[in-house]
Image (cartoon, rainbow, N blue to C red):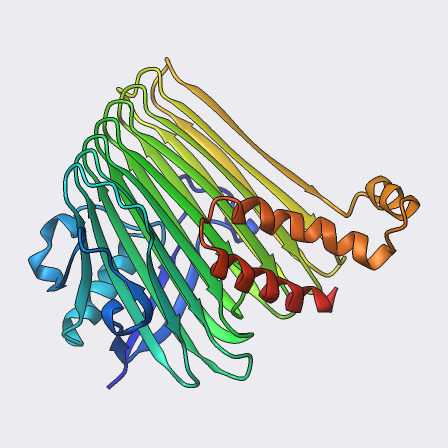
Length: 367
């Protein structure tokens, strides 16, 4: 039996004018089953990592912090998870273990599917690990796929999370992520939002530890009749904590995108640093772009930087490339691909990179 979700998502931490329609979004859908990572394709698990399927109620620490989709959404998903008796894919990286090969999960969505995967990762002290979550479907499929990832990075842990959306044009998708970093920890998120029809992406990173760090690089392409709603939050409470993330995107045809970027310096985060930047390329006068970079500050001794660059294709660059024998269409495609390749540089998986390149090529046929 399908379990319905009907809730506001991507709530902006500091409200602005309601008539801008940017304070929040709304998600409505239904879920009928949960996915287990060990049943998916290309699930590669190094011997050092412990993998268990647990009920959400048995992981109380996972409920202590929320994804960027919001507290209300997480509570709704928790209720759905309990009704479906769904398991949480729990990964534990033991202290001191440095994993050389990525843990990779490929989700292949099928027509009419309404499913989600719930993931909790515990990165032990002084450990290093990378987790890749790749989800895809054919263009003819329609349905709903959801992914929720929560990361607990203990002292001096380094963990890198990669999510890649290559869903078909008729799929609805939600991707809710969260991390909590303790002393000297380092959390990195690399995200590519390329497919799907209606996409909701919410990421919240909490830097509570001394000298904890967050780094993020995100790229998106919003194609014809598609919508992307992004909410990215960094909450810094730890002294000398540092965050830096970039968002690069392309809007095509009549695509619609909303990005909310927030760095929240809490009282006590002395000498903390934060930097958030978005660069958007608009390819059609019919696109709708909303960007809201914000810094909230309750501490004096901090350093914050934010910005957003929105514009059309640089005609001077196009003219230069044409003068070197590159035709107009190829030159424009090269500029668009550069945004995706900038993020692909952070993914050490050739097969996935090749798949992303092929998917991008298919999208750019619409340009």
